[in-house]
Image (cartoon, rainbow, N blue to C red):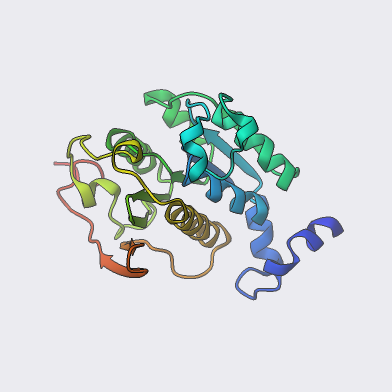
Length: 249
């Protein structure tokens, strides 16, 4: 690290849990963020601010006026721009040292595997079940930790699924095969600060995993009740019969 980097990251380097070695691990790390909306925006900003060396931003959507109530990485001037382009520009303003790669597409099949293979960790900031399942399968196949977040109406949740840990469940252990019937924000609504909380917690979990400190949310589901400002935690066990991470039959 040079003097400018030591100064830029000095407040977190002061933490004994991070120090210079942890900061260097962040600088050497790469993260894929799938979804550049209400969750992915604050997560990307905090990861860039923390000095994660390389960020891959994946989203095939464009900025819409209805996004701006909660997707704070974008602004009014970004309307109709690709979300990845808008986000990349904002991240460059925050920290030009971070390498940002734009994937202005919906990642499917081999493309998803290729993207996951390039990084150390994945953030699922999407809003539909089938995409979440596909991301989970790719992370299990390539043994990449997955930080999953979701928010709808006045409820949010965050968890970590780490295939490197033999005791860790995967996303499918928690939700099963299921069907893509969950409501979206456009159908059910959502409060802006809640998605910011969830995205920020995803960034925190990612930083802990990459820098190697603290106790991540592996095997735990953190539930946020924004209406009553309450938090609950549920323990999640790995399902030995899981069709994704379970032992082969």
